[in-house]
Amino acid sequence: MTTLLSGTENGVLTLRLNRPERANAFNAELIGELQDAFARTAQDSQTRVIVLTGAGRAFSAGQDIGEMQGGAAISYRAHLEKTYNPLILQIRKIEKPVIAALNGPCAGAAFGVALACDLRLASDETKLVVGFGGIALVPDSAVSLLLPALIGLGRAQYYFMTNEAILPEQALEWGLVNKVFPSANFIQEINSFAAKLAAGPVGAFGLAKQAFNKAVLPNLEEALRVEADLQEIAGRRDEHKEGVSAFMEKRKPKFQ
Image 1 (tube, rainbow, N blue to C red):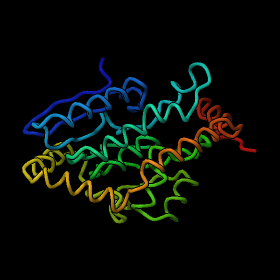
Image 2: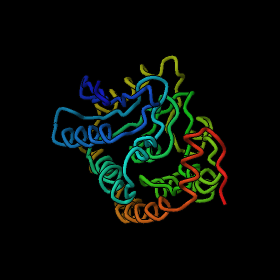
Image 3: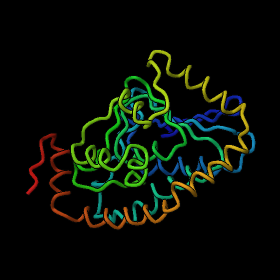
Image 4: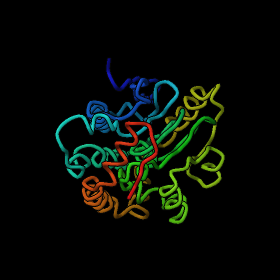
């Protein structure tokens, strides 16, 4: 079974994360499929809008921790440089609107992917969780840049340190999401909104995206490199080992 479902209708490409048994957590296969999909779509003149969403009741729980711990010791820097950093840059550089259709919980690296999208449309069942601090890692996938840019540094640090969920109403008030729809008709609302964008001046949207990137995110690539360096340090510490052990054993971590 493919980890990424895709379908195009009236110029709208829908990419659906398809690991519902793992809350759509990212593994190497899924990330690779997403990168390939964005590379193809960048060259496809028939696709005017991209919608990224999740199968089942979750958008994505972020990185599949089990995969990261399943083999030999890995370099977090190398992992990020191969996976999330290129994907974030693809999303920001593609000259087509990218909508994160947040159909349910979204955490960790998936939060970064959603933040990189041009618009975030949420279900009333959505919960947004920074997530990294729970296993003693630092924000990556551009969360350290994009989250403060959207809600302010103080709020970003609070939700990283507490690991509390940001609920849809609060996310809408802060501009973290653009609209909130009832879960009962979420898919129909997303399809309708995406169709309206696809009927718009997509070429101008793409040029404006370049302008927004230059004005607000000129240091995106540098931020991704710094995150990767800091994640390499955090991933080697005993705090992280304890955080992962506690997560896998479903207990509260005992950080020393």
